Amino acid sequence: MTTTTGRPAEHAQSPVAVLMHPVRRGTQLLLGLVGFGVATALMLHSGQGAMPWAVLDQGIVDRTGLAYGWVVLGVGLLVMLAWIPLRQKPGIGTIVNIIVISLVIDPTLWVLERLLPAPALPAGIGLSLGGTVLLGVSTAAYVGARLGPGPRDGLMTGLVHRTGWPVWLVKTVLEVSVVVLGVLLGGTFGWATVVFAFGVGPVVQVAARWLAPSGLAGGH
Image (cartoon, rainbow, N blue to C red; front, top):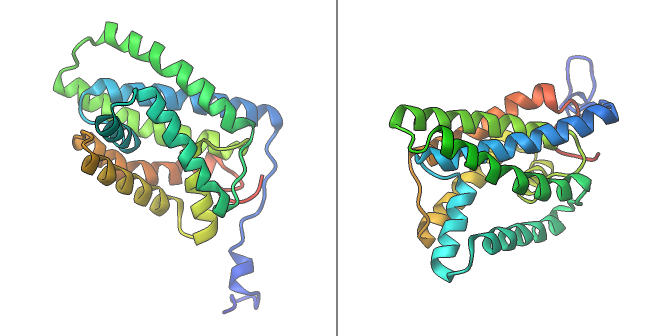
């Protein structure tokens, strides 16, 4: 198949690598991770439903009786094992991901609990929707910096690279799959979980236009 210029279609559609200044990469990475941690806390505090991966973590905790933190760590390590066949490699951003997000979530929850100790329904809806949008943008920011994705987003970018599917589709399939598994294991979810599962992928796709000039998959 060729284009009107006579060039093979696959070459015409190949992404063009765009250099990103190191200062922007570092800043975008940190802001993206901070935003991710804040977004996670917003959804947890909303009371309207956990994010899909959190539902999976809850289901495993319910089945095993293990502490939540150990389950999160274990799931992250298992997800990184899936990187091997996808030929994904961790970077400095992968390590910073684990540190920054864990440091941001608890202080943010502390602030939210004092500002909105028991969110009413309208506030809960706002927190959930705001958290979904912020998390999607933050994901595009820190993955787009190309300093190494987190365990779960490394799985996403690896699948995008290997399958050729669009980011929104891969992200949505992953989120829906883990929430179904989490529910089967006993995890809890609400309407916000469903909105997040289907809505965060498109947000990442749109935000990547500005925050990931070289795309979200492929080499650094």
